[in-house]
Length: 481
Ligand code: ADP
Ligand code: ZN
Ligand code: MG
Image 1 (tube, rainbow, N blue to C red):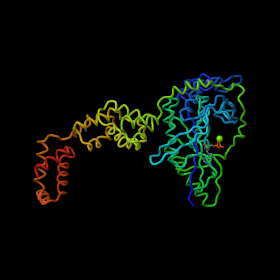
Image 2: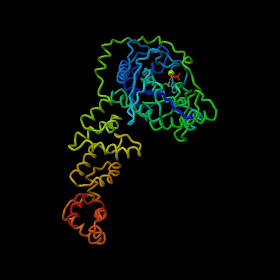
Image 3: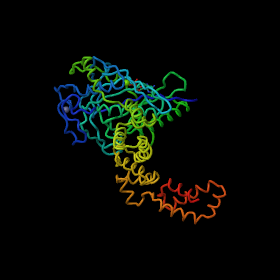
């Protein structure tokens, strides 16, 4: 039987506000544990929460950026459960009146396009952070656990997608696109590594062509886009196998183990009614003027889709290039900065970014703004190629050193003595040597074997270790022959 996978993502994003969601403690990351707390975010009796307006603004802007309807009336609810990372025995969240509903994100998958619906975006408070000591750092097997409440009460936005995603690749592109949008809006730094963006993936499978949904599992501990894609790929295979062996899929939450490359059961499913949601009586409902919403709309900057169109129009880039270059804000910024200091063809810059630079970034698992290479490196290298100092082949050769050390291309080329030989006299001498050493091949060429010419060019390049200007070699060789 052929199966199709159905995926929906729940993405948590910590908002980049100065202060927490319901108190004025700082949200700064990486401070001494438990130094950024107060009676409100420690849940002490008698303390009262006050909603952070900036956080509400950020959620509404996020909703506007992905075409959501904004609720003019909204409310906070208490989600009741007990866990030691939460100082109260409830989390302030939203239930049936979220700030935003019915949005969508369009994905350009290169050979097809698809639209992923967004069910809702709501606002809640983050929990504290548990550190399990002993065992493998997970709660199972730990000797004891420590809790840091610095993160407790940090504004957290949850973006819930419709089950419209069909492949692990689409899931990755969707999450990356949302990240690019939110970073452009300036509402979060969306760092998967620091945990300011956390993705949970729901996945089920069904016979291809069926319109009913299968039973889903929810995957946790996806710490990178790579693990999101790998975990989904694994889980889809696991579900297929289970069905083929006559088992039933159980609705449960599963933990992704990156090092073992598999998922394992964490807990069986809890339901909304388990949480006994009710309106938080300490927080007044929110009522917004549509004029305020309009003013937020006016503040939305250029978003990735618009930027992509501008790259096509303004720089004459193919859609494929523009799509990849705007996939992250950092990559688009890098490209634009390079173009602004280079008089040549923007496509040449795009080629180096999407070619060699992306290749080395991928192998090192780095973002473009984390590497030693800057737009200045790329542009200096292109200028060296343009003025004939080096060939494209030499540029490729020095690229790894530039990537590793951040040394400028001119300096590397000088140090390694790799500048291109473009003097006619020098090249003429080399060609004389080649002709003298390959009399038999020269004879073949004169008898009409055109392939012999390529061989002779190759010999000249070999003698100069690739440094001879190829156009000049071709020209002078023809003349001499
Ligand atoms: P829950 O009751 O588990 O909270 P929801 O209906 O709220 O489930 O959906 C949570 C997430 O799971 C959403 O992103 C949704 O798109 C996705 N989802 C729902 N049903 C399925 C399914 N059968 N297969 C895959 N994903 C699903
Ligand atoms: Zn506080
Ligand atoms: Mg739900």
